[in-house]
Image (cartoon, rainbow, N blue to C red; front, side, top):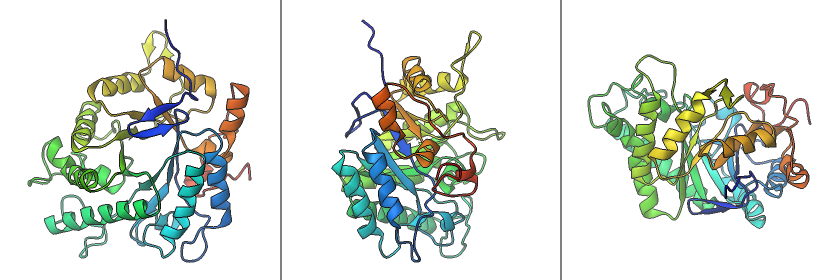
Length: 336
């Protein structure tokens, strides 16, 4: 008997118990007062998401340097009210039995000598400082009640470039082969897993279009290194999944995902700009994927999953206009 998967299946993501297979991934946070303190709208948004049927919430992106490229549009783990504000946020999620991860994403890194030091130029001392900053951010997430953290090693963020052979031509133990390029992340993960009871998720790119850059084969090697270091889950940065088959040819992204899932034992979370329940269930049942992430639909309507669950079907009101992302807002322009 074939058991069909459904987005609202109760399941486990490693050590985390989820009420559904849907992971919400946040982006920007602009609803803040002077000093970074959260406005009441943020607490309301999390309340709506947490009680809607979402399985896991990834927070909006956090930075730790006020001069980072996206610092104006993100919150900072070092602002004075961080622990107090986000302990209230995590309590809201936990009251609805929804785990929540803090998402750390930085574009630049300041090693004390250069505010935008590149992967090839950062010293070993600078690498140790970066690793200590990430570990300290994890400690702050823990103090604020987060169940874990997601380290953004995808898109064009700093660590994504560091592990990419196109950008990293170092000749020491942090350059060269896959193991060496991923070492900066592996060492962080090992410390976190040894010292904390904390879910560590990593967000990676499946591939890029740069010559001598990240290939599908290389990204699978990266995932295996992260798993070996102790990562609890891996999320793929979004690729639009607008079809399952083109004639007899299966969507190449789903072919890649199934191969990745065969190669690692940790859960894989898949994004893909999916907007309706039927398409998402089709992906679940035509692949080895167990978890799906969504972002912009939660911006348009934080509690839309409640309607989907009640009706057994649904389509997000999000029109994929991308204004929320391109204009770096945490609210929808069309559906306020």
